Structures are given as structure tokens and as C-alpha cells.
Image (cartoon, rainbow, N blue to C red):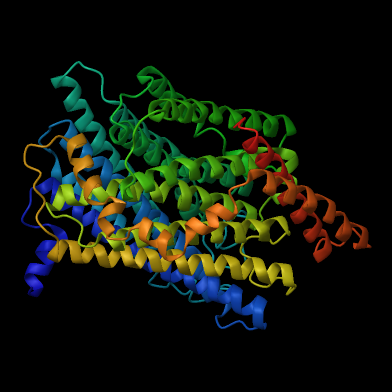
Length: 592
């Protein structure tokens, strides 16, 4: 395949305008995403080298710039752009519209990708103490604003804030374009929108409302940089965090919309409660933008305001409970096939619950006093992204890309390697971060105490990141090979649900050529099953472990030492014993 044909295949230049613009956004999103992954590897390398060997291979500016560029590229260049691309594609296709005002979306697309470059350079030299050539190392932070003459010793280029404004412009211009097409659809049909489209519209409104605060903050920063106005740092922080928390829901609610689309389709059952889903969408929109201060509990603000924010934050859990109850009731009793799309959908469903629980602790003032501004918060946010958001995005992309390109995935085995590698790596990474946070490591701390339990947590996070990123590289290579050499997909006349199930069947585990039965025979699992068939024996073993667990407890000595291995031996033996004794007894008695 020549270069011209490669470019045509990559950007789908032989397809209709909607497919071309969406594919352009997806390709640019993946490019920014891969660059952001490289930035994250630089962060992991610096932290692992320090805790393990006491070395700092990068300068402090390079380290902090890597953190910021990772966030910008993966959140704005990748996630935000891909979310808009998916919503644009399904808005046009499912509403059966002819796109209008194409120039507006083209301008928005260009603005976003230029904004990413403005946030990185070129550099304007300012005669100010602390200025250097890595202004992205300043960025937004809990103590924002930072980098403005007269308000910080670390001064950055105003082009950084102009880049932010171009990012804001993408959100509003692209959002207006999408809402305009929903308006056109409302004139053609008086029927209610399907639930996934309701969520897509709500998400775009959430983006535009959530960005209001950061747009105000960006304009304020530029005017303050020019010396035209003064700056109230606390008010500026509050305005920024209107965006800072809403962005979690901007990124996560597309995953919820994907679950509303995929779970009924894969289960081949109607949604349990259509009305509950629509009410949940409204509640998400109401309670996702008005809780900026729950990230500012330690700022000197009125306590009554903080308590109100705590209550409003808990209110966000109401539509979440409604959503997961609705989806669980939908799939209950269904005969669901195990394929890559199902696997990523289930991972996103379960991961969202886990990540959401860690978020409730962030919103509780008493707990926040312990974990505030630590790597626990970073772990929570990455749990939302890596275990809730990305899996659902991948579930959608695994059927959306064949839908757009007309080609089946090149390698089913590569798809499964992607799933398992990504899932295992992400879990290890998040556990490592949250262990660091519980041990009191402040986020963005380049140098931390080099003690064994922190070294283990940092290295666990790094190992997990490497596994997940290598798995994602497998997906990227599979994607390129699919665009170039994927078999033609016969999908003429298929509806969306039929197409999803067609692609899902192709990605079924049975099509990998790996037989679990043959593996079972190879490992002689039948013999092992027979040896462990008596649940009463396991129950007895559990009882013995409970008794043995008392030994390390008696030998522990000073129980105030958190890293004492005898304490961990005690709680591990006790917990394992309780599980074995309790569950095995119930199972042996045929009660469960």
C-alpha cells in the first residue's frame, strides 16, 4: 500500500463528510493520546528511579512538564476530542440528518488541535524570577492560579492561557454545532429521543456549562497577566473548579451513555426503566456543575458552604444508583455472550462502581482532611478514567470503527490481549497510587521518603502503567492493520443493534482458537478439582488458619509500626481463614 492509499485509509477520505471529520478527530485524538502516554512514562520513570535508586534522570521542570502535558494531551487532545467525535457520529447517523454548517465544526476541530500546541510553546521570555523554558510545568494546580507576574515567582507564557481559550472555543463551537442538529431533529420528529441520545445531548450541555468557570478564569488570568485587572486567588480557584470537578462527569457520562446503548443490545432485552434513565440524565446535569468547593475543603472558606457542597456531592450519587440499578435489572437473567465488547462493557460497569466509591470518600470533609491533595485523589481520578471511562470507550470503538470503515478487526487475539493486559495493568497502577496516597504522599511530589512500603507502591504503579500501555499499543497496531488489511465487513442493511452483535460475534473468545478445555487437560485440572472437591476440607483449613493467625499477633511487639510484617501476616491469615471457613461451610451444607 502506497503512502497516498495509507492516508486515505487512515482518515477515511473516500467516505462521506461526517465519517471524514469524525475519523480526523479520532486519529488526532489517538496521536495526542499516545504522546500523553509517553509523558506519563516519563513521570513513572522519574518516580521509580528516585524511590528505588535515589536518582533523578529528569530535571524538575521536565518532570512537572511531563505531568501537565500528560493531563493536557490525554484529557483534552485525546479524551475530549474522542468523546465529541463519538457524539457527533451517532448524532448524525441515529437522527438520520444531513450535516449543516460544516465550517463551524471544522473551525472547532482546528481550534482544539492548535490549542494543544499553544499550551506547550513557543516560549515568551519574561524578566521574572523563576521563569524557564518549561512553562507547562506551571499549569493548573490546587494552588492555581500560578505563573502570573505579581502573583507567583514562577511565571509562564500567556500563550498557555490563550491555548486554554482555544480549547474553550472548541467546546462551545462544537457544542453549538451538535445542539443545532438536535434542534433540527426536533423539528422533524416529535417522538422522544432514545436514552443514549438523551445522554449525549446532556453531556454536551454539561461540557458547555462546566467550561463556564474555567473560561472566566482564563480570561481573568490573561487580563491579570497584562496588568489590566487585579486577581482574587480564592475566587479564581473556585471559578476554575466549576470545571475541575465537572470534567470528571464530562469524561465519565459518555461511558454511562455507552452502557445504556450496549447493555440492552448485548443482553437482547429492553431497558428495564426508560423513565428512570431520563430522570437520571436530568439529575446528573443538575448536580455535576455546582460542587467546585468539594476540592477546596482546606481553603479558608465558610464551613456552612463546605457542608452544603458535601451534601450536593452526595446528591450526585442518586442518579448513579438509579443508573446501575436500572442496568443491572436490564441484564439480569439474560444469556450474554462473552466477547471483547461485552468484556470491556462489564469492566467499565464494575470499574465505575469501584471508582465512584473512592470518590465518595473525597467528598466527605472528615476523610478529605486525611487524603486531601494526596495521590489518593490522583488514584480516584485515574480509577474513573482507566476503569470506568476508557473500557466503555473501547467497547464503543470496537464496533464503531468497523461500522465507519467497513472492515473487520484484523486480529481477535490482539483484541483479547488488549483487554486483559489493559485491565490487569490499570488495576495495579491504581492500587499503587492509592497506597501512596494513604501513606501521605502529596500529589506531584517529585521527592518522597525512600522507605520500603512507598518504594513498593511506586513500583507497583509503574509496573501496572507499563502493562496497560503495552496492551494499548497492541490495540493501536491492531487498529492500523485493520484499516489497511482488515477483511471487508458485510453489514449492508443492518441496524445499529444488529451491527453491534455482528461485530461482537466476530470478537468472541471462541474465535481466538484458544480452547479452555484443552488447557484444562494440559494442566490436569480434573485431578486438582477432585483433590479439592470437599468443601468441608477447605472449611477445616480455614479454621486452622484462624488459629494460626494468633501466632504472629502475639509476636508483633510494637503494634504501632505500620510496616511490621507480622501485622500483615496476622491480618492476611485471619482474613483468608475467615473466608475459607465461612464460605466453604456454607457451600458444603448446600446453603449457597
